[in-house]
Amino acid sequence: MSGVGGVTVVGQPNDGGERFGAPAGSAGAAAGGGDLRHSGGPWLRAAGGADQLVAHLRPVRGELEAAHRGLIAGAGALDALAELNSVRASWERRIEGARGECGSLAEKLRAVVRGQAQANEAVKSGFDGVKTPGGGGEW
Image (tube, rainbow, N blue to C red; front, side, top):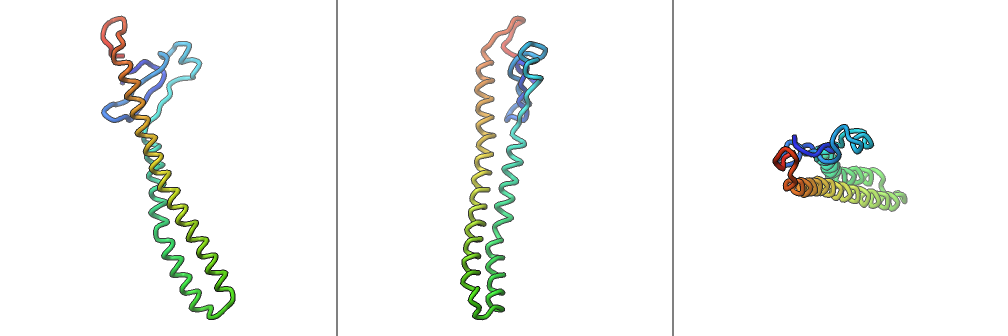
């Protein structure tokens, strides 16, 4: 693992990790209390969880419709059927809204990982040209 010290980026594409920030043992590192580590793993797991919620909610509308049909068949001409239709429509909107929110969240979480990788590469590229005493630009 290469880097400046202080912040470690793990799990980046084409790299085992990068370290940025104050060298360990310096005043900057002491103020920060150690290394900061981040990777795309937690973001991608959260995105996967949101995708699972979308998939889990997919059949719910059909299941609600089937249950409602059975209820109507057994209820005959009860006045409450109009209210039941209203409640069903409300739940259908909520289910579709939840699916949409989860799908949107999954996309945004994956975008965070892409943004982190791009920012890390930009910072790394900025350090590539820095020469250190003792030779080389490699930390």
